[in-house]
Image (tube, rainbow, N blue to C red; front, side, top):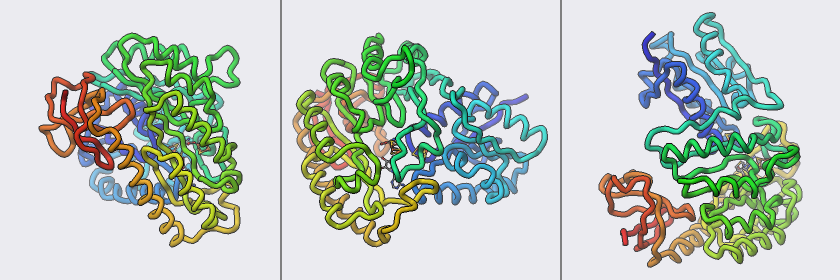
Length: 439
Ligand code: SAH
Ligand code: SF4
Ligand code: F3S
């Protein structure tokens, strides 16, 4: 039989992006090739995110637009995976009549079998069972030719149950992958030319905890650091409550570990943090940031902040602004609080109205822009190592890459530099990127 074409649309976080890569790997073995043209697809997979209501709406409007394609080509199979699929299960089949298949976050490995079944029986299927160990965790990130960077899953799920968050419900309990398997995967990636890996998990700092005989996270980092050929290691996401002294010292000890940490603080008010069930205070957070900067002064620190959490008073919000002034993050992803089903916060009274949330978000973002720009400007005139990733999106004559601190740098260069780390002098700093020249 001839090759078939799959179009994959991804919403949500890096976990989902990586899951989409795994979905493609599995389908590739089944004679599918990737297409960028949705009109040419025999199979469309939509990998969904339900972290906020807006994210979920986007998924439904995108699914709605697929109706016309199904009408034109009744043989087309449309499948929905990811966190909305996990949360809604069969309900999505009722709501979106042109869908064929719904598969949950623990069922990626079953996709070929499910597709065969849809093809053979013409039935509309849903599979959202959750397991104590996930076969899809072991789907390796197989190297692709000329790939420079790769994600590597080290754990899945989350046991933290922050009161606003749906992730523990849609991704399941925390599970660590075996270190031997992770290291073998990274070795293979490195042998095939991958220079940078990002270790992925909802809370990487608790890697290996509670698993008998397994390494803990700083030990895993030390082992990854020894892999020949690999140049850069990143990880995401870290929970501030579990950021140990040992992990902080890794930023000084391990030459491949990049000086960037994403450390979501969520709020600068102790009373809000308490109701969020985050397990740290503002003072704990600041202490950890100070320690990181003492050990690695050039570390870049980024964060996530939620505005308008139930009961957040003006004074709480001002405390968040104050924390931002104290820490001066390199950048911040900020969100308006959104009610999620099943979460504790959704049952709290004192919801903040949308206008106030919008106003706070705007204030916060304007404030952060100043700090981001100031942090980037500190780099003007400096020579930084840049791992060249490709040509710039906006100008094909320019190259783009990232510093170890995860800042995008654009400069005039040549395509043979892709995959190399070169020294670039920063000429100008902007909000989202730096401009430089090869020195
Ligand atoms: N595991 C990561 C984050 C996962 S979700 C961590 O613990 O940091 C990414 C971000 O989405 C969170 O850090 C939080 O800022 C935001 N978020 C999660 N649930 C939300 C909700 N109900 N409303 C608004 N933002 C939310
Ligand atoms: Fe959600 Fe909290 Fe888990 Fe992060 S640590 S995924 S915010 S429950
Ligand atoms: Fe979204 Fe699921 Fe990631 S809810 S943020 S895709 S874990």
